Amino acid sequence: MAHLNSVIQFYRSSIQPIQKAGEPNDVIYRDQAVAQASQVAGFAFQSAKAESALIAGYQAHTEAQASGAQSGEQQRMQNTEAMAEKQIAALKAQEAALDKQIASAKPKALAGLQAQRKQIEGALDLETAMKDALEKIVGMVAGDNDTGLVGDIERLQQSVPELQGTNKTAAPPLTTLESARSSGLTSQGAVLFELIETRHALTTLIHNNDRLHQQALALRLPMSKILRSLVQQGQQLSQDTAAAVTQAAAAQAAATGKAAVGHEVPAATQTNSGTTIGNITTEFKALAAATVPLSQEIIVLEQSRANLAAWQAAVDQEYNTIFHALLLRILVIAIALGVIIGAGELWTRATNKYVRDIRRRRQFLIVRRVVVSFLSVLVILFGFVTQFNSLATFAGFITAGIAVGLQTILLSVAAYFFIIGRYGIKVGDRITISSVTGDVIDVGLVRFYMMELAGSGTALNPTGRVAVFSNAVLFQAGTPLYKQIPGTEYAWHELTVKLTDAANYRLVCDAMMKEVHAIYESYRTQIERQHRDVQNWMQTAIDPPGIESRLQFSGGAFQLWARFPVQITNASEVDEKVTQALFDLMARNAEVKAAVAATPMIQASVRG
Image 1 (cartoon, rainbow, N blue to C red):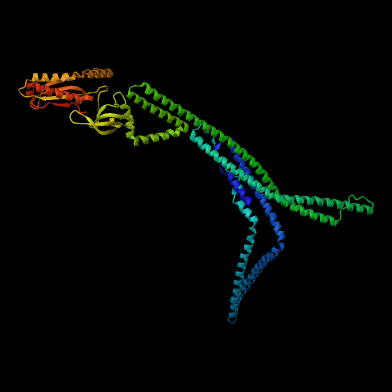
Image 2 (image 1 turned 180 degrees about the vertical axis):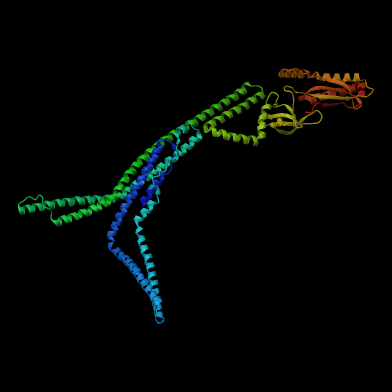
């Protein structure tokens, strides 16, 4: 029974789909393994049935006397059951006869007949109850015939119905190694793990096969010894019979003087020899019926082990092939990434060495970062993924989700390319956005930073705070961004001087503007140089910066209005010089001082 349990376990392990990736010939190995496991199970059950019958025969012979009493008891119960049936039939006949008598009896005899009928009914009920009890007992005894080793083997064989059927489990389709070799790392890794599982399953099958082989050898060994003993006994009896025939022929020839040829063996010798050889023959056939299937099972197990070993060798070769292909792909990916990273490093060094403009250098480095990242993603993508149709569909859904969920970030990235463009902003520019004025200190891929400036009058100083804006602010219609013309670092300031009604306007205006022109001459060349650079860069004519002045009415009074350019970096110093010059002018010229109705005012034309 233990051997049959191991055989069933081996069979069910063999029919399981243990390989998902491999070559087409692996299906042949699998089908052959299933067929051989089915043959092993068939031979094992055939041998077990023959051996159980042999054991039952020995037990019946040795336990004949002990079981004789039980058989006699069973026979007695069957005889009692038959007698009860006869008694029931007789009582029913008597009951029917009494019914007829009661129907035609006189009133005096009616009471006696009815009493007899009640006695017969009671006896009939008793016999019926005894018959039912005996039927149950006899049925239980008859049911015991299916118990024991023979019944266990039959029920065990019925628990594996697939051994009796013709429908065999079809092998699952295999992933061919040709497609796996050209696949990405993920597919090759999956195939590699599947082959590792197949190797482990085959190792387990070979171990179970060897264990079955040892069990079968151990089961066959005692029966083989008995068979050899029976063969020796048969040969010895044959030799004794031949010797007896020879002796009998010689004795008869000596008595009659005739040849012994054709004379019969004595009846006693013939009978004894025939009976002994018949017993040996019967026992030999019974043992051979159990031993031959066991020997066939051993041969099939040896063939099964050879098939499993060949299958395992094929799987090992496939594993080595996929493993080498996987290592080669990893090496190619590593080399490609190394080349990309090396080229990016050379790009960085060349940019730092040959690009002098800080803004252009930063742009080149950002482009380098984008290119290196894009190529690295492509290499990894082509190295790991092979199903590009599914990838395209998946990427479409991912892109739609990103476009909805990361809308602001995508706008910021798109705006970045406008910011670094020709008319964009760079580090050091002074800009005004959302009523915040400051100097740009950093420009990122999604946001830029500027140092906030604030102050009274024309002087702007850092507030100690950094303002952070998303690049997407460029696409907001209600948030304009103001910046200097590229290449210029000057702004416009206004001078306003209110005059009295009795003032000599021309004299006062000429004197004041002379002072302003004198101060402007100290930095005029720098302003004109910036103007020429802007014209060359924009390739268009722009009105040159200069001092503008006019006399005008404002609030019911005369006033002098003048507009002059100042450098942003020293605007406060220029305003201070203008203020000091006008103060000195009024101090030394009484007429100018009398003409000024209020304190002059200097302010920026545009804030920021």
